[in-house]
Length: 286
Ligand code: C2E
Ligand code: MG
Ligand code: MG
Ligand code: MG
Image (cartoon, rainbow, N blue to C red; front, side, top):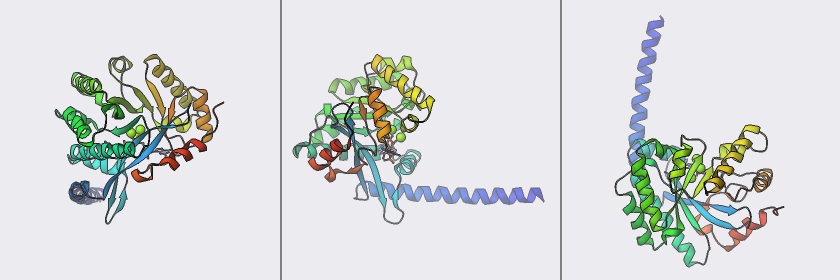
């Protein structure tokens, strides 16, 4: 009896697997087709300075509006793109869209230090990554020092020499690097010291707990000290409440990003009104 159930269970599982695989393939093909259509676009989340209360940058975040399934969350389609080998094509597209939008803002008189673009490991380790970045910059006309690339700690599990070379080449052109979701990965502190990293982005998982949970607060404090010691800026991600903002100001955290200031918005929603609204919603620094 038990055996039969097992067999039945196995067959059922195998059947489900192949359906999922097929669905993945179809979804992957749909994604490839979507990349150059208006189904695929970027939203931009403002980043603020906690001392000046001004918008200093934007993070580009990929969006896919599937004609039948509607908006598919980036966590899902990015993972799909990684599995199905589309992430490099997707990443190229994101880079170009972000650079083009940034140039448009500059031409409209919108001031910002940088536009931050997420880069996946597979994209970063491609041999032509440096030339692709330089290409996106020259095609758009965006100055290299306006571009920040967000990488993750998982990059340092691979060939560190190659990673360092790529970072050095781009850094010498003026491009900056930040470490996304900092604290959730595996980066050795020794290694971090050797890399041209301009900024640590504290993962929102830690920020979520700072007002309630002692260990999150300690991790954030330690990260801020580390940033200071290593001469790296630190930005807090996922700031949602005034309490979190106040505490971060007290702790001397330089920058923040989160729903408290603004959700990610369409590129053409970024204008003087939005910039002003963001600055006004913030509480005075005390
Ligand atoms: P991420 O790079 O860590 O981006 C931050 C995520 O946190 C975004 O989710 C953003 O919308 C969300 N967020 C910002 N502020 C708040 C807040 O106050 N509260 C909460 N609960 N969430 C907040 P999103 O847009 O869903 O993106 C998820 C992840 O997908 C990104 O995490 C990034 O890892 C990945 N991703 C998005 N676009 C790209 C891309 O173009 N390329 C690559 N490789 N990955 C991307
Ligand atoms: Mg990011
Ligand atoms: Mg992040
Ligand atoms: Mg994340």
